[in-house]
Structures are given as C-alpha cells and as structure tokens.
Amino acid sequence: MNVTASLASVDADLDTAVDSCAAEVGRLAHIAPRPTSVAQTGLSLTFLAELVSKHLATAGVLMLSQIVQRVALAGPVLEQVLNALRSEGRIEVRARPSHDAELRYGLTEKGRAGATEALARSGYVGPAPVPLPDYTAVVARQSVHATRITRQVVHAAFEGMVIAEDLLDRLGPALNSHRAIFLYGLPGTGKTYCAHRLARALSGLVLIPHAIAVNETIVEVFDPICHLPIDFVKPPSLTKLDLGFDMRYVPCERPVVLTGGELAADMLEVQQEPRAMRNLAPIQLKANNGFLLIDDLGRQRVEPVVLFNRWIVPMESRRDSLTAGGGRHFEVPFDIVVVFATNLTPGKIADDAFLRRLGYKIEFMPISADAYRRIWADECSKRHIGADQRLVDFVIRELHAKQGVPLLPCHPRDLLTMAYERAMYLGDEKIDETALGWAWRSYFVDSGGGGGTVPRAERD
Image 1 (cartoon, rainbow, N blue to C red):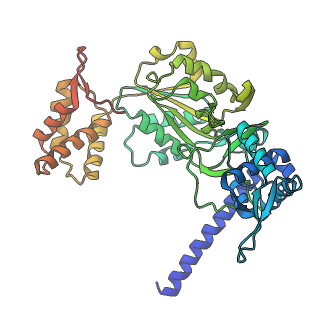
Image 2: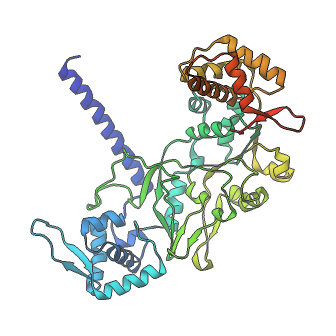
Image 3: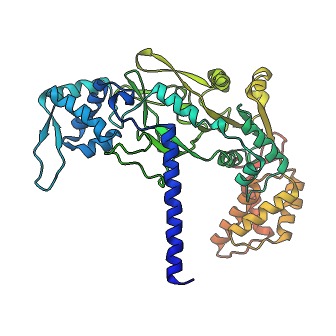
C-alpha cells in the first residue's frame, strides 16, 4: 500500500470513529437532553445560586468558563444565575488581565456570608445535581433489564475460558430472568471469576449522575471506584447550547460493583458524613443500570438474613426506599442484576421460602479431568512453560486421586505458580514431579475433620 492510500485508510478510520462518537452523543442526548434554561434543570434559581456561591467561596475568583466546567451547566444557563447574584449584590466582577477577554467573578462580603451559611447546610461543592424525578426517568431509559441476552453474547463473554457448556447455558437465561442469581459451590470452582465474565454480557454505555437532588438534599452518586468513565465520548461544549447530553451525567460503562466481607448494614443506606455535611449513595444506588456482586456471602459484617430482608422488596418491585438527611424518605430505582456468590451450603444462609424467591440457583461443581488438562495447558502457555502431558497426569492421578481432592479450576494456576516460584528460587526453571509435589504440600493442609485436604489459602 502506498503512502497516499495508507493516509486515506487512516482518514476513513478517523471519520468512522467521529461518526460513531457523534451517534453515541446523539443517543445520550435523547436519554438526557441538555437543559437550556434554569427552569429545565429542575432546580431552583436559589439552589443554583447557592451552589455557585459555594464554588466561588472555595476557589476565590473564577471565570465564567471555569464556573461552567465546575457546575456542568451551559454558559447561558449560568449567566442567568450570575445575573441574579449580581443583582442581589452577592458577587462582583473583578479586574482582569489585559490579555484575558473573560469576565472574572468573586464574592462580595454579603456573598461570602451567604456562601458560609450554604456550606453549613450542605458541604457538597460539585456539578449541579439531577432532580430525583429526572434521574428516575433516565434510569428507565437505559435499564439493564432492557438488554436481551442471547446464547451468542454469553459465549462471546466467556471466550477463551474453559467452562462447561451446560453451565454457560444456565447462566445466560438467568441474566434474562430479571431476578437475583445465586451462585454456590466449593471454594475455587470459579464463581467470582465467572460472575465477572457474566457482567461482560451486559456491557454498554450508560449515564451516571454526579449527584441527585432530593428536594434540597444532595446525594452523591458518581464514584470513580465503581464507575468507569468512557474517554472516547467527547463532552459537548459547555459554553454553547449546541445539541448534546446533560453534562451533569458522566458517560460510563455499565457499573460492575463488587462487595465482599467488608459489606456492613450501613452500606445499604445513604452514608451521611456529618462533619463534611455530605450524603453518599449506598452501593445499590451506585450499581443502578448495572451489575452488583455480593461475593463470599455469609462472611460479611451484615448477616445474610438482614441483607435479604433489606432487599427482598426492592428486588421484586425494582424500587428502593432510602432516607435522606432529616429523616426524609424517598424512593429510587433498583435497576440491577444482583448476583450472590457463596462457598456455604444455601440451606445455611436462607430458608427454602426465601431461596425460592431468589430465582436461579446455580451450583458450581468440580471439573472433569479433560477440562483440568485444558486449564493446565492454558496456564503453562501464560508462563511460557512446556505443557508436559505426563506432569498433568501425575497431578491428577497421583495427587488429586490418591488424596481424594476434587479437581477445581483454580488448582492448575495455583500449583503451577508455586512450582514456578520454587524453580526461580533455586535458579532452575525446570518444573518436574518433585516441584509439583512440593507445591502440593505447600498448598494444601489437612482439614482436621476427616474431609481430606483444603488449600492453605482458599481462593475462589
């Protein structure tokens, strides 16, 4: 290909990417149109004036473009707010450098007093929040349950992974059920790993609000730990009222929220920070329009029965009841695929009546010798180790079989890793039966209950 043709190909790719981005922005604009006036924000002029005052109080002097960036509303919208603040004598135009064409705003003494009062009521200083009714409508427009999962999509999500086909064909329909999914089985059978893979089938772009407004209470939703912003979607101009989506939202991948043993009862409610005067969304609100995995169920700081009782109604009604500051109750969407994963017997966690209401209960079993060999070969390939058939047969027949240890998907990875670490320590990269026997003895410990051996550090 000559240089001209090569450049033409690059230009074509760029045009395609630009068109795709424009189409995506257009779709997002349909889900959450940009407000073009204070009235369309759903927030009062007084509310926005206090928010702008708090930004000026914390930053000092700001240009209009900087206020627009901070508050995430278009310039003409904020000009209405700034004009109101000027008419009340709360802000003033400050001197600007000769080379700077933009107006610079700062608080007056009256404005600083008002900002101090506003900060005492709410410590939130960020983008303008989205009113709860608007947020509820946006969640409905991008519902995770509107996605229809096909066999092809699920198999693509698990591509490259050794997993029984019948297990895949149970996981797939569970995603379409609109009900909670309960995964159980021995440690090391791959429940957590499979749950992450399952979330791939729900991939897509959604809008996550920085915060929502429940009357005058602001609840912060966007969390960089839970939400992955999409860089390729270029935000529309913040200073013009061109077509574009509401910039009070962040375009993100569908949320995939994972919580394990750290889960406590208070994490299911609005987190109030009295000193900072802030309200943080609970995990289920952050997971809206996405996937929530409660891993290692039964080992959390909150008892399973408390968790189940808290969520049984939201899981069925798809509405969750929360409490904001001052004891005010409000309802939010519960638009989530909830997955529970546990190493414990289901009967030890919940009674039959509750388990019936959970929907799909999927057991993860030990794998076949053939699947074990395929995983072994994959792990050898990752470490650039020759996949010697005699070694894997030795592990299966002489170690697993004679010790009565079931074949689990985690074993090839863990045994090969330990054998490889020993080889590096000895300065000999050779992995043989001796190395694998050593790894086995280092990995397993007698359970003490006549039930054979278990890994020294259980890993799912």
